[in-house]
Length: 109
Image (cartoon, rainbow, N blue to C red; front, top):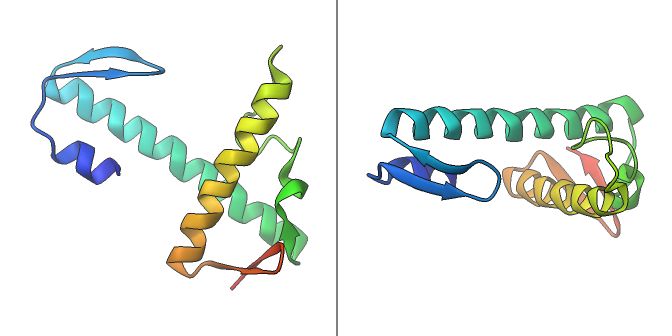
């Protein structure tokens, strides 16, 4: 989790997207940026529920740019990755009691 990563006493980290990050202050700044991105995605997912006012199946999130604002030349990959990320957010929201899964659909509590 992000909290575990923040608690580590390190001065160098290597990430898949940002490469090497040096210095505790810079590491903390990048972690905060990442947390902000995750929070924004979660807010967009919950807004998607609010806009529809009904239960939603996972595949309804497909091609709605919930995670990626614009698809690139790698659109097919991005759509798959986007659905996986949405699913992870939905699992987190279930654990938090924000949504429930009923059969193959999700609904706001």
